[in-house]
Amino acid sequence: ITDDALQKLLCLDLSPSSKTEYGLDIRDSAVQWINDIEQDKKYSRWSYSLMDLLRPTFPGMLRNIKRNLYSLVIICDPSKKESIPLLKLIESFYVHSAPLRIGLVFNINPADEVTGLQDAGVAMLNVFNYIGEIKKPHEALAFLTEVS
Image (tube, rainbow, N blue to C red; front, side, top):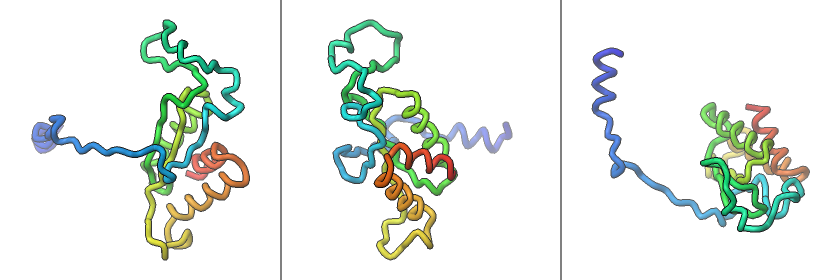
């Protein structure tokens, strides 16, 4: 580590007071849900009972309960290189039936005059919406991970 890099590392402010926290209302229509644990047939064999939360399990393990108890919402621009690992991670959560309701919020150019011809993020959102309508949202997510 060079002296300059070490100086920069030592000057970082890692105190909790410097963090900016955001809140997202998951009932908002901006969240596009990939799955719904309470309605999807994929989770039909899971128990509805919340009493399963009291059963012993390995530390950190989420219980397979057929309720939308845990939600994971990712905010990303699908056209950016940094979003690829996040999209692949949430796809693996879906494929491996993690007990998470998975949602996406696309952080793209909000201007109405911008189309998919000018902005790749808008184009990917349009394709995601189209595939989600004619097929299923998880297939639209699979398309996004294959394209990226």
